[in-house]
Image 1: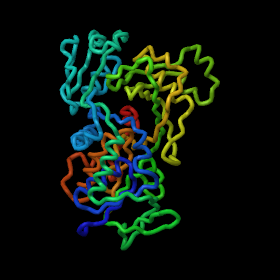
Image 2: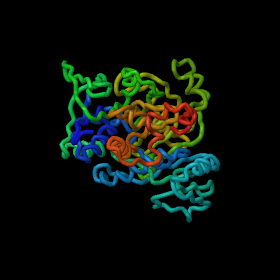
Image 3: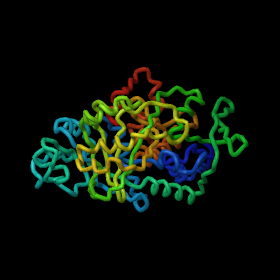
Image 4: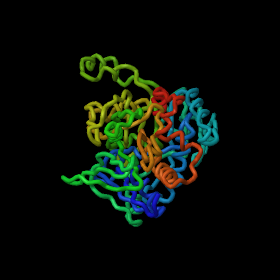
Length: 427
């Protein structure tokens, strides 16, 4: 690589800006190409949550853990909290989840509230059924259920972190420009130019290093480049409800219902069974409905049966039932929430682009070309670690032992057998 080379980063989402930041920090000249506004696509629709709790996946735990270490440098703008994730359900499945995540710290089991460490910053706390209502009074109606409180976890301002990265990039001479990446052009068999459209004109942009961080545009970009990597895109949605009755405790952690459920009564099913598109929602739904306080209201999320589609832009169109389904998914946790049936929430969302095993595509594609994509639902929490790791790759620095398990080249190994089922279980 020549001294002080020109770096082109395609995509000004939080992953692209993170890669640009860490490369500029090492003295490289960095330009970020974005066809819209920075942070205005998937990054802008994030739930902004983070966790180091990744049952069965030490590599993702290490990547996110490193990101959280780096987040301390942006704490003033990102404003992270450590309220944790609270999984609620049957005790045995929660215990099994905890045992599959030794990286998340020590497991503490509580039969009574007196032993529960409210201010713990690290580890897993399994609150057994007899103590659930004592530790979390708003869950006291859940007889026979337990909870697993995992920390460090919580949420932070994705927009704040993104703007902090953008400002740091500018201070180091990096620049964002408007334009669209079209294709690679080669010279002597090596990728040497990016064909770029700016306004009505096309031009060849020379680079020594190219980073592709296209967000939901990844499936289309791979197809245009003739690359066969196993990715799919699924629309996911979240709903924000105002909470004038204060039914969602303002100090609560992210709460997750870890059991299957049916969200409609038999009478409601009879009325809805002829509605197009609702049939899958009238039976049992998988675990995973979750919510957290946000401002003067709360976020509700429930995407029980996401479908695959090719993104035609940044944002999918929410179905008309998305908000109500998300709200109903929280009823087992907060049984007074039916008071908000009929309230029209603010619904938005983005695409989860993912691989079969739900690990990202992070690393080299070929000489001088790197990829940061398929961060399905964890792009914000993993962004800083991903940007730093790409800088390590690009500059030939030492890599952590788990880096190769995230690289796109893993799919070239004939012995590699990823599992869609494992990924679905992890989402």
